[in-house]
Structures are given as structure tokens and as C-alpha cells.
Image 1 (tube, one colour):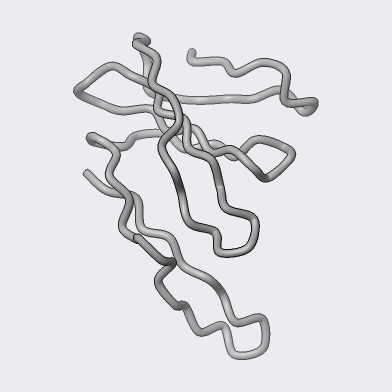
Image 2 (cartoon, helix red, strand yellow):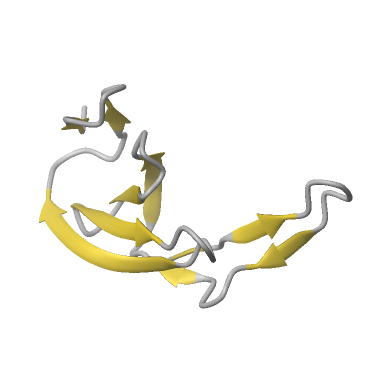
Length: 87
């Protein structure tokens, strides 16, 4: 599976693919962005992992930085960004 990323023209609403998009994530199910806007977490359906991506603040491009085996595919993060929950 893949995650497609786009920049949004705030005047016209035109979507433009981000550099490197689509980004590989095995069968994405849930997606959550850290409150600081610098990290994105994706849960997967079949591979049973949560994948962490760093978000490039100037381009929006994603770089895979971590992977953790889990059971579950929904994600929640606390407002302060200290805890990630997989119910």
C-alpha cells in the first residue's frame, strides 16, 4: 500500500503531489499526525506494525524513521504528543 501526499494551493485549492509521493506503507489503515506537525504514524492492516515517518517541514515529504510491531490498526495520540495509543 501507499500514502499519497499533496501540497494544497491555499488560493485555488489545487493539489500538487509532494516530492517522493506516494510513500510506501504496507496496507495503511490508520494515520495520525503528532501535535508538533513533524511526525506521522501509520498503522497497517496485514503486517501488524506502526510505521513512523518524519515530515519535512519545507516540502511535506515523508521519511520512514521507525517501525514497531503492534496488534490493532486504529491510532490515537495525546494532545501533548507524549503517548501514542493503538486500541
